[in-house]
Length: 451
Image 1 (cartoon, rainbow, N blue to C red):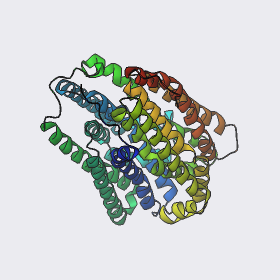
Image 2: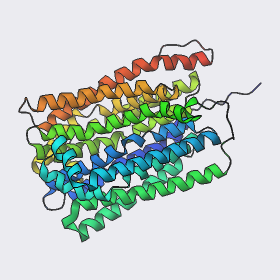
Image 3: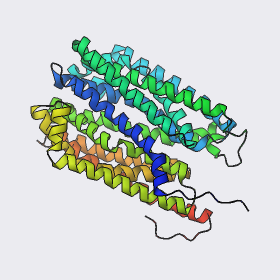
Image 4: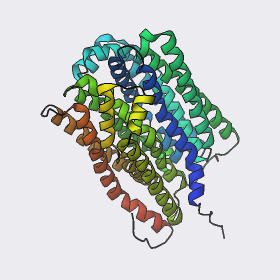
């Protein structure tokens, strides 16, 4: 009789998760690093607002390929699936690079998208364009990196992901420090260059490590357990498109949220302060998105499900407690003022925004966990629909409220962001219950109380 794999302990799950968490943490640190440099230049409000717009616009262009990581994690089970998904990855990246060039390099298109449609202040949109020109290849590099990271996660090689991200952050620090010292008049472009060169280093290391792994013969020629999504192009499209739409909706929410903020009271102040607060939030909860990959790669039976579920609650509640400590004590002033370099009204606005965002890490952890359960069972459409409701509540309520209240726009955004996330988590939890039941049924174990 074939022996069953040993159930991992909480500590072993932690060892698997730690490099992914450090990767997420270091990626989240990238934004505050650039913010800290740009905040010390002349006209910091305009520079921070323009850089924030450029960053979220670049991330919007990369949105469809963010989910290549869980797709590769779930689908690359044999040589056939690897070749097919790899070809799909390259086709997506080429398309997005062309789209980025059209939007950024053709001035009338750029102004139509960011000024006429999204209604960013003209001075902010014009200041952001040089950074977007620097970031033209950003979507393709992110797509390649995410795909090969998914393969590394599937085969437990998570350590290299942490090292590659560390190299990325070091590069960002070097470029930011040198750039603001040598070219202080081009602060927004310096920020874009720091992001671009950082992700280039990260991607190169991920590709080299994954290709070395694949050459070791870890993939069989054919696997009977291969999911349908990796067998044909149509299957891949059915599996991946809902995930791509999910990440697109999630990332679309940020520039649309900024667009709503731009219509409210104190728009430049809000556009300068709220992205900094979001950067601080990401510094604490950025690693929690990697819980999705832990679920996809490690949940295989009721025992591993229970261990991963407990681990999710422990890590998520710990991150929420940490952010609450920063939000409700003088640590907020110390970090936003002393480290990031904010002053006056921008500092106060960032601190107040963070108070309302304190519960977000717990919700982010539960979101990633339930998404992983659904992805594992192939229910990617449910993941997409839940993200749509998040976007609908967040952007809809911000745009509806900011024009009908005298509250500063950053405060409105800080209130509705966790509420929208809570609604998404509720839907994901409800829709993931059959996926949890199937984990028990597959092993012919009577399920206990689900949670």
